Amino acid sequence: MAVEWTITIEGKNEFGDICRKEVRIDKRWERLFDGDFGLSIEDGKKIMEALQNAVVNHEAETYSLYRRVCPDCHTFRAVKDYTTRRIRTVFGIVRVRNPRWMVCSDCYPGMVGAFAPLKEICPDRATSELMELTARLGSVMSYRQAANVLTKFLPVEPTETHATVRKRTIRVGERIDDQVANEEWLATRKMEERHQLEMPLPGDRRKEFVISIDTAHVRSAEPNSARSFELVVARCGRGGRGDAGGRYFVTASTEQKAIRDRTLHALRREGYCGYGDVTVLSDGAEILKRLPRAMPKPTNHIIDWFHIAMRVQPMQQIADCMVRSQSDLSETLSTIDREITAVKWRLWHGRVDRAIRDLEGLLARLKPLQQEGVFSLARLHSLGSQLLTYIRSNRGAIVNYGQRYRAGLRVATTLAESAVNSLVGKRMVKKQQMRWTLHSAHMLMQVRAAEINGELRDRLRAPFRQPGPNVPSLFNPKPPLLRAA
Image (cartoon, rainbow, N blue to C red; front, side, top):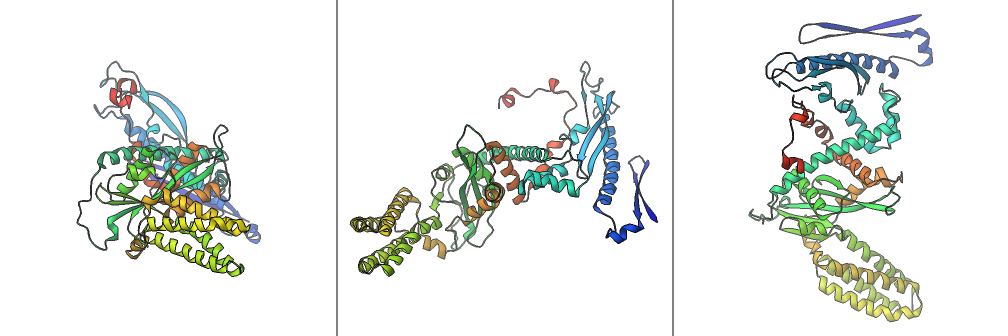
């Protein structure tokens, strides 16, 4: 026994014409014993594909007719030809009639040209929703897995392969990158070097704009380059510990101007208008030291306390272990243990010069003890030398961390570390161990950053899809200065 379901889709256009489409689904009684209860995914695909076909054809026909009317003289344009255009949607590929209209000969005498109206609303031959969904899936999982998910749950054809997902994701990343570049140009024009004009309010943590910045290493796929390249990952916001972290941004360019422009763009979205204290938190890498020098004043550069503490912690552990195990040097090692703790305390309170002197004295006392042949003493001296070099290189960026901590301000690059993990690590480094080109990695990160910032849909709905001019580009040249730019 079989049951046939008939679904009728009915629509009415602006002219009152009614169009109907029927979808038939056969259901057999025997399928219930196999656990096939209700509509299956395949049935849903069939229904949505038929509905999408009807809606897209109606909208394409309506828009083509609307664009046939000349906006100047309000007469119909002449027809050049009719073709068929394949438009990919989330519910399958729809084939629509694609007319090409001639330029109005009355308004533009002597000009011969034609344009396709459907190219204005669908330049990628795919809907913006499909581009957004493909880019979102391609940014959170491997391209091959994203293609399998699309094929499994949506009525798309097998041509939606991992190569298609990769191309669309990179294309969306390029589109977002172009939009951000235009916004960066506007932001840098308004961000002149100014000083804080607001009245200092005690206890106001939101007065300070904080930039937590770090780098991530990605394996390179280019044969003529280094084994890996760096991505600059940052999170810009305002407020102290416990407040929202702010916006993410990622850039593959390590140039000073590129990092500064990205930072100013992110700060502007957070309310920065050139007035306010800016603090840059980093781990002291040479690439990241370029940012504070290029930012508007006042901008403070602070070394992340976590990286200082992680250089002192192994020294404390070695000293504690040797105090418990070495009986003949226990008195000397206990003094060294207290001195290491004192160095950490002075660094926490911003007494850099005193910490350097104490550390130099500590290394001087450890040097003759290395002749005892104990590996731990040599290791302790090596770690102390590395810490001394690190402090000397970044002495101007070490502040009173205790005072900032008690005021509720940030003292560590926790936000940047989490940004590296969520943006780069999960997609490129940790589990998958892929190799990437610099361009592909940069564009993919633009999509991931826009997705986490919650603006991916708005970016793809930007007004770049507005209808172009009716005059062919040959008769509508760009201004010389704009063309040169």
